[in-house]
Image 1 (cartoon, rainbow, N blue to C red):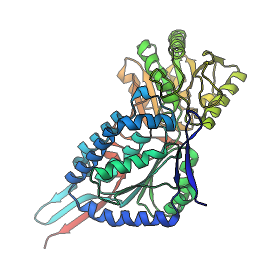
Image 2 (cartoon, rainbow, N blue to C red; image 1 turned 90 degrees about the vertical axis):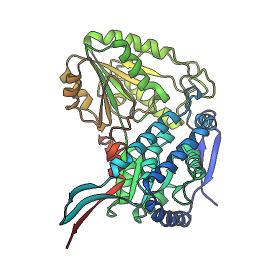
Image 3 (cartoon, helix red, strand yellow; image 1 turned 30 degrees about the vertical axis):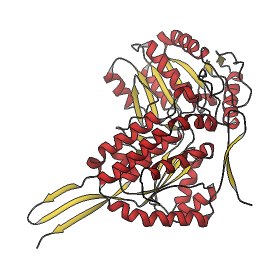
Image 4 (tube, rainbow, N blue to C red; image 1 turned 180 degrees about the vertical axis):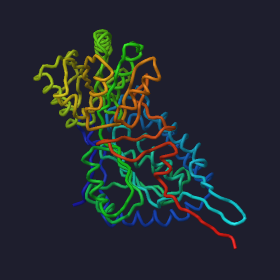
Length: 458
């Protein structure tokens, strides 16, 4: 019997999409097609590769009216937010813009005696293992620059967003990307690990859980395959006494609750200086209380269901433990909360770092808010985490933000903003958040390898 992957819709629990899993033999044939096509692709002028990639991006834009409700059915994001094409296009466009500069040779010497330079060569094949929470934007972070740099790309998407990889392959092929260069594969975990262990890829980019990242490293052990891993997060916000309070509340609470809290760099814990704490908490509660939980296909819905019952149950468990340990819940249970995927948002006070909700990744619509009395206390608390993706600092003092930022163990420091991925900056993390870096010029460096030329003229 053929094994299948099923997308269970969080809207009503129905099977929204189902696809057969590729056998190891089928996957092997796809890899061989990609290897053959990649040789010719890498020899094409970079201007042509950029043109074709951006044509594929534009084709996704033409499909957006179909994609938006598809995403609602697959992972629950409300249609009112219009999908991901804005960020999808922004990231691809930026990487296209900087490609020539990022990939140009580093000239060390051009003289009558020597030519010495460092060029960048594609890895060959890149495997992108993309997550469901922002399925188009996270995938394009690697797909666009990998293709532009001359690699072939195989995409394995999350089961929860089963149709996204199909959409992307269709769009890029229709835009003129040569056959075999960009392929979507429906793979199970054992086959994926086996392909990595067999040195099928020059680079593997994985976005997902810490356990998933561990599985990637185990599969790649001894192969010397380059890995990019973006794993868990527990991103903090810190509101100082000179912050713009209204802007801080609006941005941090949106960063905690947007997409039902299912954001890699979403805000999961907030530390507020004592003088602003009460006002911040009051305004935050007012903001969240006005949300509308419901069917994501309804344009009035501002908060959709979580992507699966399992994820919602984890958030409920963290909240329950916090309440048992003395935390205070400030949001009444919404009428639409069904005990399943539809989960009420929650703000917790009287929290501490003995509670899982302040330590473990929640990845849901809950945030704990703590009062702090100094920068030193806030820094210690922000660093008291196994994760390090972003931190959001709220102050009018740029030098202070930079000084504090240098003491925080994280990949990105924001000042007066949060929950944004800037394609001009390296997207990276530390500790259990993973390793490597996407986007920016550094993203191109990770998707290629350096090759040195030392040419002596006789």
